[in-house]
Amino acid sequence: MYLIDTNVISAGARAKTQAGIGPVAWMDLVTWMDEASDVLFLSVVTVAEIEDGIVKAWREGATRKAADLAEWLEALVHLYGNRMLGIDLAISRTAGKLSDAARGRGHAPGFADILIAATACHHELIILTRNVRHFEPLGVPVVNPFNELPQLPHQR
Image (cartoon, rainbow, N blue to C red; front, side):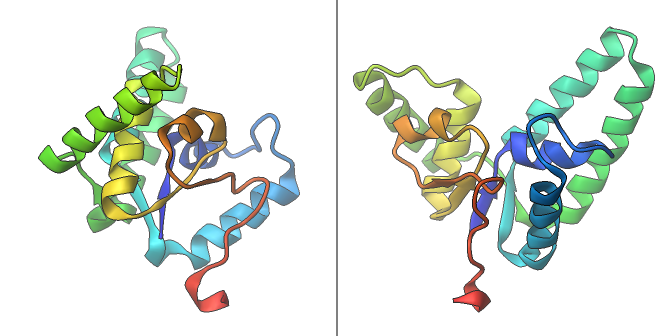
């Protein structure tokens, strides 16, 4: 099972392909995510990061972009429903441990990445991210789905 990082789910927020993602890789991921919907989860941290982008767009006067993103976010929240994972005491404690372990190895990951990693650890999920280097110091399993699509349980 997989926890989708913000940068992967956000790639679907735009009608056109994002920079650095070829159309074939993007279509492969979209098809894979549709087939994998029962094993994909989102963190509430991702909602916070997307909301931050929406508010920034409003503040900067990009009203069309903000409205489109807000509509897309509402669809995501609806689609993921009970597959939206929150932060609780156990995840918070795991986050503190992961943060210190990374710092002890000379890394300073962002707090959002630490919370996403702690959520993945707590629920025994693999993180799907384009920023593998952000999560490797945290010692969590990661896959860049734009480089390699993970196998689904029914494909094994």
